[in-house]
Amino acid sequence: MEWRASTAQSGTRDVWNKVIVFAEQNVATSFDLAQRLTHATNLRELVDLQTEFAQSQMRALAEQMTELGEALALIISNSAGSGKALGA
Image (cartoon, rainbow, N blue to C red; front, side):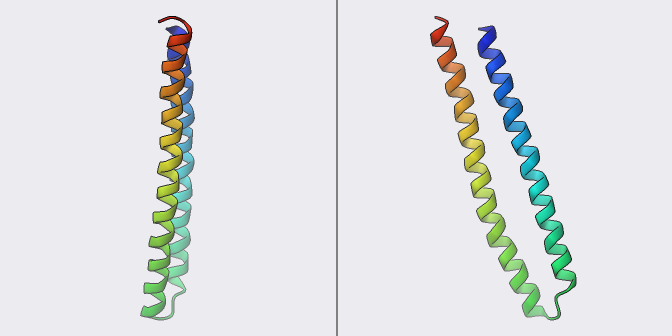
């Protein structure tokens, strides 16, 4: 039982680290957009930049959610599997 809790805690720490990395990436991407928007010369360019950003972020968020889902599934699988191996 202790090993299962330790495995879950370690996995949770890994997931939390991923969340922090994703947040940092998303903030950096947002600041990059802000920088590019300040150099836009007309409304069309602003709209194009915002559209490109929105599409890019949707793809990034989908990838991030997939990665987090896989990591969480692994935690659950490892925690459940370790209990069986210990006869719990």
